[in-house]
Image 1 (cartoon, rainbow, N blue to C red):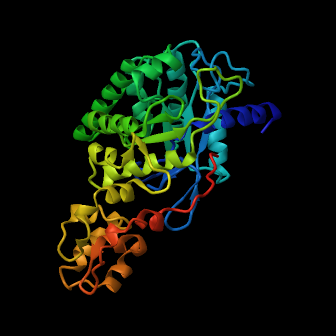
Image 2: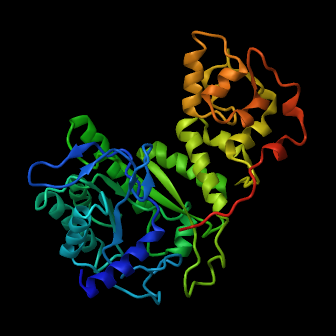
Image 3: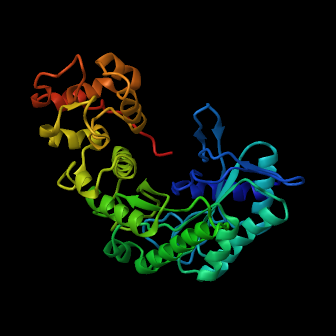
Length: 403
């Protein structure tokens, strides 16, 4: 790699680190044909560890960090005083192929600032994916960050070559978007999401290829005054209306020469973590947005306890529940019991009456679950009434890192 290309890679890989939405869950398994290269494993990508211990990753870069827009929260905004660089289509293709051959990556996540026009930018992103697929027979994972203002025909083309498409919502309310990114149109973003969702659903029904890993989006946390409750309710609506694969929550990070309307420091990273946990409660634990809202205090999720425990502490009258009799929905609400543990409990109790030791073998979260459940040989004595129960179960404070 020559020095000029290495310099571009340094700038544009660093510029891409603020985009969190780069996992590859949902991509179909496939292998390269003769003369091609690459494969997808169905495992998550982006410096993640799979269940069998493998570390898999992707090349995560911007095509360019030049941008016509001047969004206040973005380090690559038009008025930002940062080093700029721009890859050619062939340079991105070469980097992807060469890094794959050296076993550095298993896929590509490609985004970009807006150059010339949304359509021109989208055309460049598509050319990268199309060249990799058609010229090099690349069968690895490709995620393209699409431009909502681009023409629908270009979005249609992008879905033919990418495994996943995404459009960043950026901020949870139209008012915040108008204040911090007045050149962006929240209605246009959600219209593009809707059109993309319809295409993905239609392609599945017709059994043809179009972004088989679905679409995702990203919301910035802490750049405006939105509460956690409003973020969760916005997320629930997006999941319901547009069939998103998942929503990513990205803690706002102060940027150089920031506008005075922005916060001077990042929100606690534990807040981002709690939002992900609340998101999972809706997606996998059958919690409604109202349930999650019921776990907040003045609209904010607690930092010392997870949302599920916070909900249980606010609804102590519903506990303890009997692991041998309670329905699956109620077992999912017991702190310390995950989805797999609950399914194992439901399966095991068909053949035997479960004792506390049996539950311990089915979950690693028994310590947190004990005050909230009953087993054949165990019943807590008014543990849920203890005034110090929250303190006993709260997580010890820990330092999280953004990057």
